[in-house]
Image (cartoon, rainbow, N blue to C red; front, top):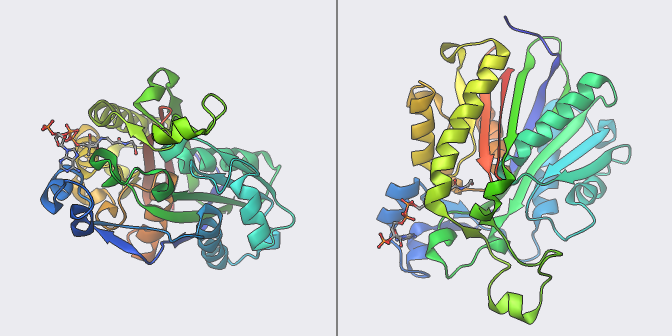
Length: 328
Ligand code: UT7
């Protein structure tokens, strides 16, 4: 049985920096090959933000486009949530910096930290606030400058990440909208993916920098298994909560960490590969921005039509995972 929640996405936008870093560029930087990167991850190229371009700038550019599509101006927004693990600075929040860039003077703004699942967690929070009647129009943003926390000498990680931002406006809708939300976390596996230095536990010192603790550290193989298991679990649980079946889904908009993860998830969920939206080949893993950009692009490309049932599905550091089923 489909429940009409009455809260949906009314506009999406994206921003990708213009500089493209290809696999053959990376071949000149570390001991890797185009063939290895494509067959193991599905990535061909990624975007890199230049010096002086950071997360708040990219997030606000994506937000401007989402507002335009939603036919709203910045002062109509009363809630801004930014999902990021690469904030411009430790504080203030990137959401407040974006609020200022947009001139969204009536909005309350804050960040959430849920790594690659951040955009889905932000959507879940905004959904509840709008449903409760506390806020009317929410802007949710997934924005990352992953290149700022990437060790460009580590071939295990540097081939994976890219920079970018995606944004969505959520509001009350007459029909369709969000049908179900499912989220999970498991802090026991936090060490699988982390930036160990620069926080209150190990504040930046010459030593932490020498030890490269300000860069992403990842246990790739262990994460891979958890990503497959938990993205499939999240997708299936959200689907069960919505009362719909696999065959009702038109498109899955997943977090883009590795094409092999996505094929394995599709298999576990009994979904044909054509129903999985992919843009990892062009952008790599943009953490919280991946799902946000994928939704904006799928819409731009006409892959989502009015009345379609779609699932957003993500997994990331924390560990965190989550899925949202919506009728477009
Ligand atoms: O965003 C959400 C969280 N992220 C994820 O969920 C990512 C999950 N993990 C993965 O996507 C994959 O584990 C990776 C893409 C990171 C790695 O792929 P893999 O198939 O698991 O490779 P591996 O780590 O088992 O390494 C296989 C071999 C190793 O060499 P040996 O020990 O077999 O001689 C690595 O040293 O590949 C080597 N290798 C590379 N070779 C060329 C690792 N990175 C590279 C590279 N180029 N860039």
